Length: 198
Image (cartoon, rainbow, N blue to C red; front, side, top):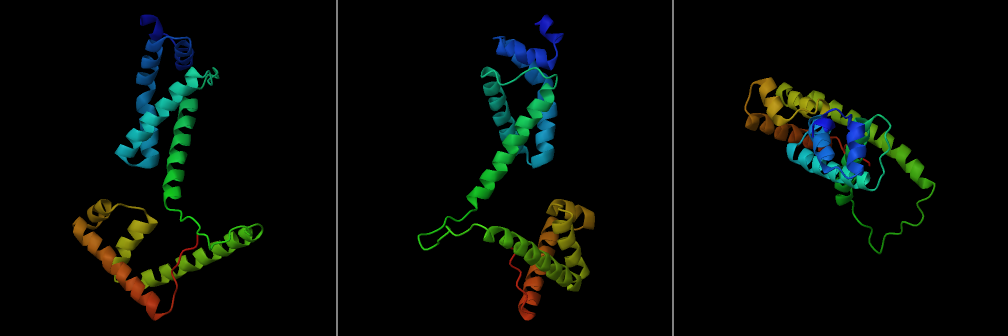
């Protein structure tokens, strides 16, 4: 195993392709921390990061066995690209689970050129919705406005909001609940439609 320690990551990958399983063990121990850190930074969920990490290395092993790696001097970049693709696949699957399938009564055959117009229209609808939300946010009591801003504009967790504002998580959740109720009431009173177009 001593001779393996002298090898670069690229040489270890090629040694594994050549049948040396110990080369892969060393390659894994060298790269796993950096890879997991990258995945965790992107997905921000430990269990999900574990799953994506495992799936990434399954794909790495498969690609190495299929001789789909060539020594370009950048094994780590190749590894990160595979992890990125696994993450993107995971996000796509999450979106697909939320898609509603068309029924027999829906005719989707005439989508063509209207699709671009719909996307432009959606963009303007979404901009208007965000403007309306900002207007209503400004009418909220300061504590509710603060929690809405932190949650949706700074993407803070309720735990982070609670720590930043010096209240309990339940209090920050309660403020968010009342903010949403107040914004719904304002929208109803002023006939504002808050449907976000996708």
